[in-house]
Image (cartoon, rainbow, N blue to C red; front, side, top):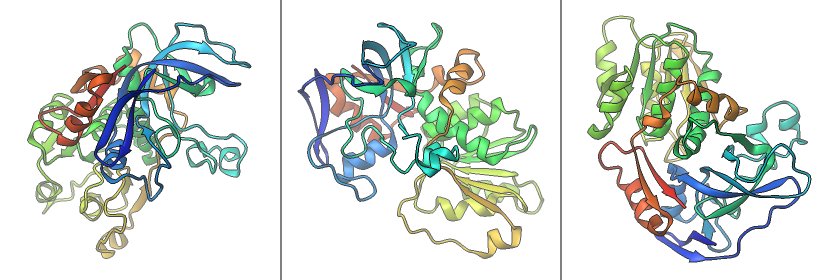
Length: 339
């Protein structure tokens, strides 16, 4: 099969490699769509993920969908040709976190594209059957791949305990930010504000009903002088100052949800702001038991994943897709490779 391997930082090559064989409890997927996530970009540019370096060339990509191409032993409920989406955080089911229901915090998690686990930017990938959800006929492969960032957003909105009519703000209008906005709408949020510095990313959140501003500072000016701050603010950019900018935007007694992976890792903020407001600051990691619900939300038209601004590239142009994802030009929020 062909696969896009990262050999070194800024060195992505599409080459031939052996096709995986599904083991017990696994199926082999023919990958139809794989979206490039910011964490893929981080590994590509820096050569590691959170200080973990691959021991050799690594296949990137963990937001994907495809067709069942082969079925391993001890698998039931799937047939060759089934269209499926995948939850890429494969938990063990036996550690203390899994037993407590915190499967996204599994101590033995296997995550495709995290060194040294091969990802999905390839013609085929072997995956646990337990990580799959069948796609209804009205859900495209592209939408199936984007149920992964949608799941991240859904998990964050659930953590926030969003109630109908509550005002919210979202910092960042990349795929995670837009998916968070989408989920907030589906949960019946009141006014929704979005801060996004890239002008090309303003139109689509506005189409979804958000009031869009260029920065968190502009939002803060909007709220100054009257108590109209949102009850919940979602930080979905990971920008260098975003963590510190989030808490002044939250209403007293409200909640800040940190979804983005902060860069740099050490963050500085004014402690008196969350202290005096008695804020809840909640970090969110990946997703937890969201895939089936996300697929249903897409199929029922409760979210607008099929309309997210994307660009598609064949596998042979995976290096070009990666550069497009890095450039963040225009309104595109995901580059999608279609093996």
